[in-house]
Image 1 (cartoon, rainbow, N blue to C red):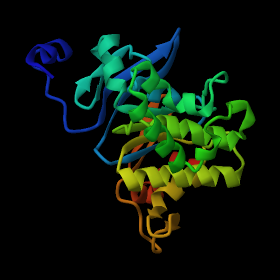
Image 2 (spheres, rainbow, N blue to C red):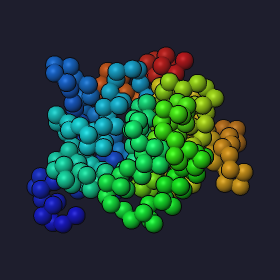
Image 3 (cartoon, rainbow, N blue to C red):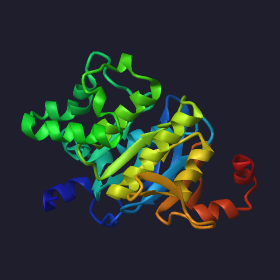
Length: 279
C-alpha cells in the first residue's frame, strides 16, 4: 500500500492497523430503524479459526458480509489484511476479494453452469489461461472428493455435494482468508460431519485464516477438538482434554459481542447467558 493510499484509507493521526488478518473497530450497522450490529470490536490473527455463534438474527451473516466488503458499516472501521475496507472504493475491494474465499448459505451456485464452470467462475472472469485454470479446478474438486462431477450441474447433486462444490469454489484461488456462512445449515448430521471434516482439512493442510458462522454447537466443538491427519487422510480427535489452540470463539447477542475468547474460556465461563446458550 502506497503512502497516498494510506492517507486516503486512514485519517491523520489514526493508529496503524495491527498484523490481524481481520479487525473490526467499534463497528455498527442497521437496516432502517433496526440496529443489527452495535459497537462490535474484535480481531482475527493469522492462521486463526474464529467461530461465530449466537441466536438466529443476531447479525452473524451480516458480520461476514461486512468482512468481505459486501456491506459497509454505518460507523466504525474494518481492516482486512491491514487495509481499511470500510473506506475502500469498489475497484479496490474487487482486488482485495481475490485473496478471500467465501462459502455462502445454501451454496449459492449458478444453476446454469456446470460444476467445472462454477468452480472456475472467478478465474474465467479474470481470463486466466486454460492451462493454468484447469489443474486448479481439478485440484480443488479433488480436495473435496468431487472430481468426478466436473461436467454435472448443481441440480444433479445432493445438498451436501453442492456445499462441497461451494467449498471448492471458495478455495480454488488459494485464499488467505476463508469466510464460511453456515456451511452445514440444512444438512443431515452425516453430511454435516463430512463438511466439518473438509473445513478441518482446509485449516490444517493450508493453515488458512477463517471466520465461520454456525448454528450447530456440535460442529463448533468438533473444530476445536479435532485435527486432520495427513497420514490417514482423515479427521481425528485430539487426546482427551486437548484443544486446537488456533480456534477461538465470538458470541453475539442482540447485535453486541457477548464473548470473545478461547475454547477453554468459553467452556469454563460462569456467565448465565453463555451457560444457557451452551446447554
